[in-house]
Image 1 (cartoon, one colour):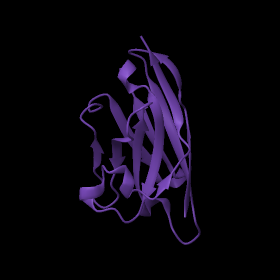
Image 2 (cartoon, rainbow, N blue to C red):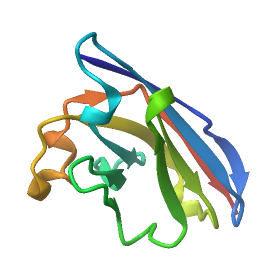
Image 3 (cartoon, rainbow, N blue to C red):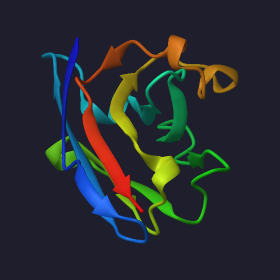
Image 4 (cartoon, one colour):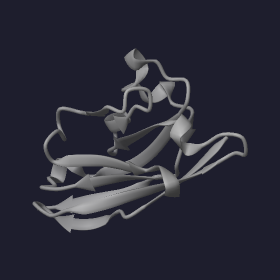
Length: 129
């Protein structure tokens, strides 16, 4: 069992930056480093989409093409926290951002939100023109 709590969302002007945080509480017997960590977002009327994620097996971080070069994911295992640094924000980035965790993903499912087991409640990011 993993509980995830996101924070850091808000209102920002286009071109600005935000950093989202996600703190994980992992059940006894497991450790944070056992989990792949991902960020997803969902805009009104749209499906939830992959933003990026860190895969524990190979240490690689993957990004959606739409955010590559602007967003950066990092994780701090001692504090069980994963971050999403968002720069050069655009109005199209406006969405509810979710943190996700899973320990059994295969690579082909990594970008599929339905494949992830644990989710936070989401934090709203609004980018104004």
